[in-house]
Figure 1 (tube, rainbow, N blue to C red):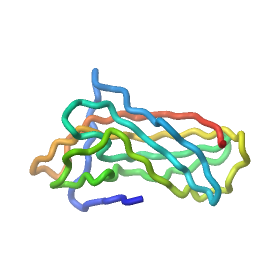
Figure 2: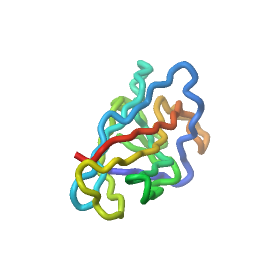
Figure 3: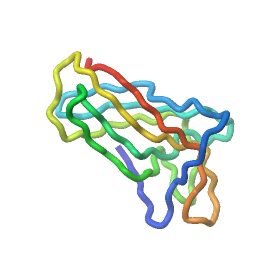
Figure 4: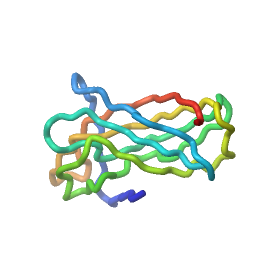
Length: 139
Protein backbone atom coordinates (compact mmCIF):
# COMPACT_ATOMS: atom_id res chain seq x y z
CA UNK A 1 0.00 0.00 0.00
CA UNK A 2 1.44 3.37 -1.01
CA UNK A 3 0.12 6.23 1.06
CA UNK A 4 1.50 9.68 0.43
CA UNK A 5 1.04 12.40 3.04
CA UNK A 6 2.44 15.72 1.89
CA UNK A 7 3.10 18.27 4.60
CA UNK A 8 1.51 21.62 3.92
CA UNK A 9 -1.00 20.26 1.39
CA UNK A 10 -4.18 18.47 2.40
CA UNK A 11 -7.41 17.38 0.70
CA UNK A 12 -10.31 19.55 1.84
CA UNK A 13 -13.68 17.86 1.58
CA UNK A 14 -16.75 19.69 0.37
CA UNK A 15 -20.27 18.33 0.16
CA UNK A 16 -20.84 16.10 -2.84
CA UNK A 17 -24.31 17.69 -3.32
CA UNK A 18 -25.96 15.95 -6.29
CA UNK A 19 -22.78 14.06 -7.25
CA UNK A 20 -22.80 11.63 -4.32
CA UNK A 21 -22.41 7.88 -4.61
CA UNK A 22 -19.01 7.02 -3.12
CA UNK A 23 -18.99 3.52 -1.70
CA UNK A 24 -17.03 0.62 -0.28
CA UNK A 25 -17.34 -2.03 -3.01
CA UNK A 26 -15.44 -4.78 -1.17
CA UNK A 27 -14.24 -5.35 2.38
CA UNK A 28 -13.02 -8.41 4.25
CA UNK A 29 -10.87 -9.11 7.29
CA UNK A 30 -8.08 -11.51 6.36
CA UNK A 31 -5.54 -13.44 8.48
CA UNK A 32 -2.91 -11.49 10.42
CA UNK A 33 -5.51 -8.80 11.26
CA UNK A 34 -5.57 -7.10 7.87
CA UNK A 35 -8.51 -5.33 6.26
CA UNK A 36 -8.71 -5.86 2.49
CA UNK A 37 -10.81 -2.99 1.12
CA UNK A 38 -11.81 -1.38 -2.19
CA UNK A 39 -13.48 2.04 -2.30
CA UNK A 40 -15.02 3.77 -5.29
CA UNK A 41 -15.94 7.35 -6.10
CA UNK A 42 -18.54 8.60 -8.56
CA UNK A 43 -17.19 9.31 -12.04
CA UNK A 44 -17.45 13.04 -12.65
CA UNK A 45 -15.87 12.61 -16.10
CA UNK A 46 -12.81 14.67 -15.12
CA UNK A 47 -10.32 11.80 -14.71
CA UNK A 48 -10.08 12.53 -10.98
CA UNK A 49 -11.39 9.48 -9.14
CA UNK A 50 -10.49 8.43 -5.58
CA UNK A 51 -7.74 10.91 -4.70
CA UNK A 52 -7.71 10.69 -0.91
CA UNK A 53 -9.26 8.81 2.00
CA UNK A 54 -9.50 9.64 5.67
CA UNK A 55 -11.52 9.65 8.88
CA UNK A 56 -11.25 5.87 8.73
CA UNK A 57 -12.55 3.68 11.57
CA UNK A 58 -13.45 0.02 12.05
CA UNK A 59 -15.67 -1.68 14.63
CA UNK A 60 -15.82 -5.44 15.04
CA UNK A 61 -18.96 -7.22 16.29
CA UNK A 62 -20.28 -4.22 18.26
CA UNK A 63 -17.31 -4.57 20.62
CA UNK A 64 -13.81 -3.56 19.58
CA UNK A 65 -13.36 -0.34 17.62
CA UNK A 66 -10.34 1.50 16.31
CA UNK A 67 -9.72 4.78 14.50
CA UNK A 68 -7.19 3.89 11.79
CA UNK A 69 -6.70 7.33 10.19
CA UNK A 70 -7.94 10.63 11.46
CA UNK A 71 -6.78 13.00 8.73
CA UNK A 72 -7.26 12.62 4.96
CA UNK A 73 -4.33 11.10 3.09
CA UNK A 74 -3.53 11.23 -0.64
CA UNK A 75 -3.82 7.88 -2.47
CA UNK A 76 -3.90 6.47 -6.02
CA UNK A 77 -0.86 8.51 -7.08
CA UNK A 78 -2.55 11.82 -6.33
CA UNK A 79 -0.34 14.48 -4.71
CA UNK A 80 -0.33 18.22 -4.11
CA UNK A 81 0.94 19.17 -7.56
CA UNK A 82 0.11 16.00 -9.49
CA UNK A 83 -3.40 14.60 -9.60
CA UNK A 84 -4.40 13.47 -13.09
CA UNK A 85 -5.87 10.30 -14.60
CA UNK A 86 -6.90 8.95 -11.19
CA UNK A 87 -9.07 5.78 -11.28
CA UNK A 88 -12.48 5.77 -9.60
CA UNK A 89 -11.47 2.71 -7.51
CA UNK A 90 -8.74 2.30 -4.91
CA UNK A 91 -7.85 -1.03 -3.26
CA UNK A 92 -5.52 -1.44 -0.31
CA UNK A 93 -4.61 -3.62 2.66
CA UNK A 94 -4.75 -2.00 6.10
CA UNK A 95 -3.56 -3.61 9.35
CA UNK A 96 -6.18 -3.10 12.07
CA UNK A 97 -4.21 -4.05 15.21
CA UNK A 98 -6.94 -6.08 16.89
CA UNK A 99 -7.43 -9.78 17.39
CA UNK A 100 -8.58 -11.48 14.16
CA UNK A 101 -12.26 -12.39 14.57
CA UNK A 102 -13.66 -15.75 13.37
CA UNK A 103 -15.50 -16.15 10.05
CA UNK A 104 -19.06 -14.88 10.15
CA UNK A 105 -18.25 -12.04 12.57
CA UNK A 106 -19.87 -8.72 11.63
CA UNK A 107 -17.70 -5.62 11.19
CA UNK A 108 -18.42 -2.00 10.31
CA UNK A 109 -16.35 0.60 8.50
CA UNK A 110 -16.59 4.39 8.41
CA UNK A 111 -14.43 6.13 5.81
CA UNK A 112 -14.36 9.49 4.03
CA UNK A 113 -13.72 9.24 0.28
CA UNK A 114 -12.40 12.28 -1.65
CA UNK A 115 -12.46 12.73 -5.44
CA UNK A 116 -12.30 15.43 -8.14
CA UNK A 117 -9.63 17.33 -6.19
CA UNK A 118 -8.72 20.63 -7.82
CA UNK A 119 -5.08 21.62 -7.86
CA UNK A 120 -4.41 25.25 -7.00
CA UNK A 121 -1.86 27.22 -4.98
CA UNK A 122 -3.66 26.84 -1.64
CA UNK A 123 -2.55 24.40 1.03
CA UNK A 124 -6.05 22.89 1.19
CA UNK A 125 -7.10 21.30 -2.10
CA UNK A 126 -10.89 21.40 -2.64
CA UNK A 127 -12.38 17.97 -3.33
CA UNK A 128 -15.82 16.39 -3.44
CA UNK A 129 -16.12 14.13 -0.42
CA UNK A 130 -18.57 11.74 1.13
CA UNK A 131 -18.59 9.91 4.46
CA UNK A 132 -19.39 6.27 3.81
CA UNK A 133 -20.64 3.58 6.17
CA UNK A 134 -20.25 -0.11 5.27
CA UNK A 135 -21.24 -3.26 7.18
CA UNK A 136 -20.00 -6.73 6.25
CA UNK A 137 -19.09 -10.16 7.63
CA UNK A 138 -15.72 -11.91 7.82
CA UNK A 139 -15.56 -14.46 4.99
